[in-house]
Length: 319
Length: 73
Figure: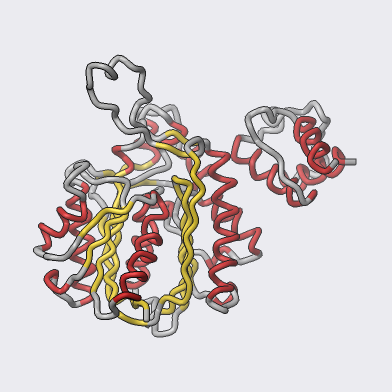
């Protein structure tokens, strides 16, 4: 017995920045960003804390699932980090919801939501009678260098959540990791110990080798989707919705071409949100769920890739 | 041989069948940005069923041809 998704939720900060807005302070243009990424706008946490959007998505998901916070047995929060190093964001969400269950953050970068589902799956194999909240949130606007036009334009902030209960929706799931600091990294601030503070430290902002990440991402989508489809004994052509991590339109186009799948198989929302890291997949999942597109038997594939380098993919049959 | 095939892939990628290309043509001259370059290299790798390292040394069509020739030798 594994899980079924009984509710979803999401939240985006209110402040929207279009490409034109970014061109006011970066040497870039709408045409440059759209042609290379498909991104037109992104939401940025200005008035909201990271906890605020995580909490809003969590509350939405619990309402959608029609369960109370006190019924939760576990909160898993896939994130690069919340407003504080400690307490974890998961613990602060637990406090604000009024839940009492164990709660922890999980860092698998943009693959975090699928990693969270895999961890949850393991809990269900130990005890089927559980309710688990997976709340993925990232505020990339706090982690990119807003003077670097090559990376800052790619990202946005958001939160997406799913409530899981006992069921048989998960047909196959797999994770990968290949440690690699060069392709994508965000250094920590180094502290101020007298013996180390004079050392030169990299700025604590995202560094990325775009072409290397592109190659990794296209290959990951292709091999992970083939692999989970095989494990679920389903043809990729029979999947109703493929929800890829929304990093860059051209990555998804490159993968679709190599998989010989039509682009309309892939749900694309990168235009309005940019890359929201761990939140990108559950944001789309929630939108489709709320629009009533998932019926009993609808087949969904999730495929994620990100810093680590990590990847994760799964096949879910809606209950 | 490799050069001819690379030029053919490039012309198809750019959808310009009479594009002037020589081994000395740079990606910049061909108006290919870094994402175009990586997409093109991936297509070339698939055509030759091999893979090459992209470490920033690839500036011209001839650079790709040399790396492919080494990889399939």
